[in-house]
Image (cartoon, rainbow, N blue to C red; front, side, top):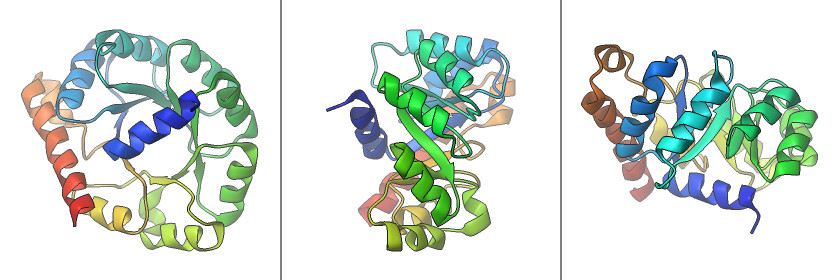
Length: 217
């Protein structure tokens, strides 16, 4: 089993990727720890912020003896993909499909989730070697779009991101998503600003509970 395959299986088992967008470097480690304590194993640090590689490395060190999977999101080019992989990213997520990013991930055995919306983009990503497809922004198309993609393409792995909440996560999972990605619904900005890591953990745990409940129905 390749490393990418094992990371895919661990993300699917957990069902949730927490998107850590806009978290200051001073806060990123305690926030990541709190969200992981809330039951989210897959933690995505977005590469559009400052010092993303340093943040990834810091979280990886903090959670090295846990089941945490630390990755990078909003990766726009191959150079950034290489940088975050060097920092320890176990998966790379892009909002679009870029063959050079996918090749970089494949070369290092790192899972690549390529952003798609249309069947053409999905096939392009799959042909280039993407491990999973990130449906983004999911809120623009809704849960039914997952079935529309999977109909002609088969049992492709789709992870919707963008507008996923505790209230609608079940709809996407029931439509065939293998996991969901969420930022604002997990990342409690007010609690982070207040330094209330207990509340950060509780918010993450509530989201995980919603996903677990949806999978049991």
